[in-house]
Image (cartoon, rainbow, N blue to C red; front, top):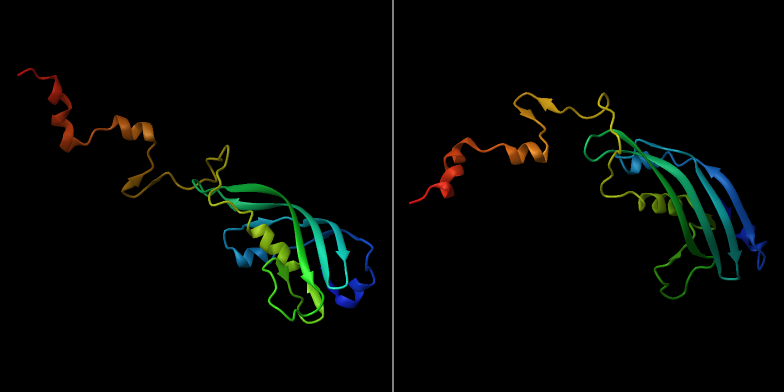
Length: 170
Protein backbone atom coordinates (compact mmCIF):
# COMPACT_ATOMS: atom_id res chain seq x y z
CA UNK A 1 0.00 0.00 0.00
CA UNK A 2 2.38 2.60 -1.30
CA UNK A 3 1.71 5.71 -3.35
CA UNK A 4 4.06 8.16 -4.93
CA UNK A 5 3.16 11.75 -4.05
CA UNK A 6 2.70 12.60 -7.75
CA UNK A 7 0.15 9.78 -8.08
CA UNK A 8 -1.85 11.17 -5.18
CA UNK A 9 -1.81 14.71 -6.53
CA UNK A 10 -3.85 13.46 -9.50
CA UNK A 11 -6.71 13.07 -7.02
CA UNK A 12 -6.50 16.67 -5.80
CA UNK A 13 -9.93 17.64 -4.42
CA UNK A 14 -11.56 14.38 -5.54
CA UNK A 15 -11.70 11.24 -3.37
CA UNK A 16 -9.71 8.11 -4.04
CA UNK A 17 -11.44 4.97 -2.73
CA UNK A 18 -9.60 2.01 -1.23
CA UNK A 19 -10.75 -1.60 -1.22
CA UNK A 20 -7.89 -4.08 -0.88
CA UNK A 21 -6.87 -7.20 0.99
CA UNK A 22 -3.28 -7.14 2.24
CA UNK A 23 -0.93 -9.56 3.98
CA UNK A 24 0.53 -8.37 7.27
CA UNK A 25 2.47 -11.51 8.26
CA UNK A 26 5.40 -9.26 9.28
CA UNK A 27 3.43 -8.61 12.49
CA UNK A 28 4.52 -12.02 13.77
CA UNK A 29 8.13 -10.79 13.75
CA UNK A 30 7.24 -7.55 15.54
CA UNK A 31 5.21 -9.22 18.30
CA UNK A 32 6.15 -12.81 19.11
CA UNK A 33 2.85 -13.47 20.87
CA UNK A 34 1.03 -13.29 17.54
CA UNK A 35 0.73 -16.86 16.31
CA UNK A 36 -1.13 -16.06 13.11
CA UNK A 37 -2.80 -13.13 11.37
CA UNK A 38 -5.40 -13.30 8.63
CA UNK A 39 -5.21 -11.12 5.54
CA UNK A 40 -6.48 -7.65 6.41
CA UNK A 41 -9.35 -6.06 4.50
CA UNK A 42 -8.60 -2.35 4.01
CA UNK A 43 -11.40 -0.08 2.86
CA UNK A 44 -11.80 3.65 2.96
CA UNK A 45 -11.00 6.78 1.04
CA UNK A 46 -8.19 9.27 0.58
CA UNK A 47 -8.80 13.02 0.54
CA UNK A 48 -5.92 14.88 -1.12
CA UNK A 49 -5.30 18.60 -0.77
CA UNK A 50 -2.31 20.66 -1.84
CA UNK A 51 -0.29 20.03 1.32
CA UNK A 52 -1.66 16.82 2.86
CA UNK A 53 -3.36 13.49 2.19
CA UNK A 54 -5.92 12.24 4.67
CA UNK A 55 -6.56 8.49 4.75
CA UNK A 56 -9.90 7.40 6.26
CA UNK A 57 -9.29 3.68 6.86
CA UNK A 58 -11.38 0.75 8.00
CA UNK A 59 -9.34 -2.37 8.83
CA UNK A 60 -10.82 -5.81 9.55
CA UNK A 61 -9.15 -9.14 10.19
CA UNK A 62 -8.32 -11.72 12.83
CA UNK A 63 -5.31 -12.30 15.07
CA UNK A 64 -4.49 -15.61 16.75
CA UNK A 65 -2.98 -15.08 20.20
CA UNK A 66 -2.20 -17.40 23.14
CA UNK A 67 -4.68 -17.59 26.01
CA UNK A 68 -3.16 -15.88 29.05
CA UNK A 69 -4.22 -18.75 31.30
CA UNK A 70 -3.85 -21.92 29.21
CA UNK A 71 -1.76 -20.90 26.16
CA UNK A 72 -4.48 -22.26 23.82
CA UNK A 73 -4.91 -20.40 20.52
CA UNK A 74 -7.55 -17.67 20.77
CA UNK A 75 -8.92 -15.85 17.74
CA UNK A 76 -9.24 -12.11 18.23
CA UNK A 77 -11.20 -10.38 15.47
CA UNK A 78 -10.42 -6.70 15.02
CA UNK A 79 -12.42 -3.92 13.40
CA UNK A 80 -10.46 -0.66 13.36
CA UNK A 81 -11.54 2.72 12.05
CA UNK A 82 -8.81 5.35 11.89
CA UNK A 83 -7.90 8.58 10.16
CA UNK A 84 -4.26 9.18 9.25
CA UNK A 85 -2.77 12.40 7.88
CA UNK A 86 0.34 12.54 5.69
CA UNK A 87 2.16 15.72 4.72
CA UNK A 88 2.83 15.94 0.99
CA UNK A 89 5.51 18.61 1.34
CA UNK A 90 8.31 18.77 3.88
CA UNK A 91 7.28 20.89 6.82
CA UNK A 92 9.21 24.11 7.34
CA UNK A 93 8.00 24.25 10.92
CA UNK A 94 7.47 21.67 13.63
CA UNK A 95 4.38 19.62 12.79
CA UNK A 96 1.82 18.14 15.10
CA UNK A 97 2.33 14.55 16.23
CA UNK A 98 -0.79 13.49 14.34
CA UNK A 99 0.89 13.98 10.96
CA UNK A 100 3.07 11.39 9.26
CA UNK A 101 5.81 12.39 6.88
CA UNK A 102 6.40 10.47 3.66
CA UNK A 103 9.59 8.51 3.15
CA UNK A 104 11.18 10.50 0.37
CA UNK A 105 8.52 10.86 -2.32
CA UNK A 106 6.54 7.78 -1.23
CA UNK A 107 3.69 7.36 1.25
CA UNK A 108 3.74 3.86 2.73
CA UNK A 109 0.63 2.86 4.70
CA UNK A 110 1.94 -0.53 5.88
CA UNK A 111 3.72 0.76 9.03
CA UNK A 112 0.61 2.75 9.99
CA UNK A 113 -1.69 -0.25 9.42
CA UNK A 114 0.61 -2.56 11.39
CA UNK A 115 0.83 -0.06 14.26
CA UNK A 116 -2.96 0.22 14.47
CA UNK A 117 -3.33 -3.58 14.57
CA UNK A 118 -0.65 -3.94 17.25
CA UNK A 119 -2.45 -1.37 19.39
CA UNK A 120 -5.57 -3.59 19.34
CA UNK A 121 -3.82 -6.46 21.16
CA UNK A 122 -5.13 -6.67 24.74
CA UNK A 123 -2.89 -7.15 27.78
CA UNK A 124 -4.66 -10.46 28.53
CA UNK A 125 -6.96 -12.65 26.50
CA UNK A 126 -8.78 -15.74 27.69
CA UNK A 127 -10.21 -18.73 25.82
CA UNK A 128 -13.91 -19.31 26.44
CA UNK A 129 -13.78 -23.11 26.29
CA UNK A 130 -10.14 -24.23 26.36
CA UNK A 131 -9.53 -27.63 24.82
CA UNK A 132 -7.97 -29.89 27.48
CA UNK A 133 -5.71 -31.62 24.95
CA UNK A 134 -4.21 -28.37 23.69
CA UNK A 135 -4.00 -26.45 26.95
CA UNK A 136 -0.94 -25.95 29.14
CA UNK A 137 -0.09 -28.79 31.53
CA UNK A 138 -1.97 -28.77 34.83
CA UNK A 139 0.43 -31.06 36.75
CA UNK A 140 4.19 -31.34 36.78
CA UNK A 141 7.01 -32.69 38.92
CA UNK A 142 6.44 -31.25 42.38
CA UNK A 143 3.59 -28.90 41.38
CA UNK A 144 -0.03 -28.81 40.26
CA UNK A 145 -2.52 -26.10 39.39
CA UNK A 146 -5.24 -25.68 41.99
CA UNK A 147 -8.46 -23.73 41.81
CA UNK A 148 -9.42 -20.97 44.23
CA UNK A 149 -12.00 -23.28 45.82
CA UNK A 150 -9.37 -25.94 46.51
CA UNK A 151 -7.10 -23.26 47.94
CA UNK A 152 -9.82 -22.05 50.36
CA UNK A 153 -10.70 -25.60 51.51
CA UNK A 154 -7.12 -26.63 52.14
CA UNK A 155 -5.75 -25.64 55.58
CA UNK A 156 -2.04 -25.21 56.09
CA UNK A 157 -0.99 -28.06 58.42
CA UNK A 158 1.12 -25.65 60.49
CA UNK A 159 -2.02 -23.63 61.26
CA UNK A 160 -4.41 -26.57 61.79
CA UNK A 161 -4.25 -26.19 65.59
CA UNK A 162 -5.65 -22.66 65.33
CA UNK A 163 -8.82 -23.81 63.57
CA UNK A 164 -10.61 -24.40 66.89
CA UNK A 165 -9.05 -21.49 68.77
CA UNK A 166 -12.22 -19.40 69.11
CA UNK A 167 -14.48 -22.37 69.91
CA UNK A 168 -12.92 -23.00 73.32
CA UNK A 169 -14.55 -21.41 76.33
CA UNK A 170 -12.20 -20.28 79.00
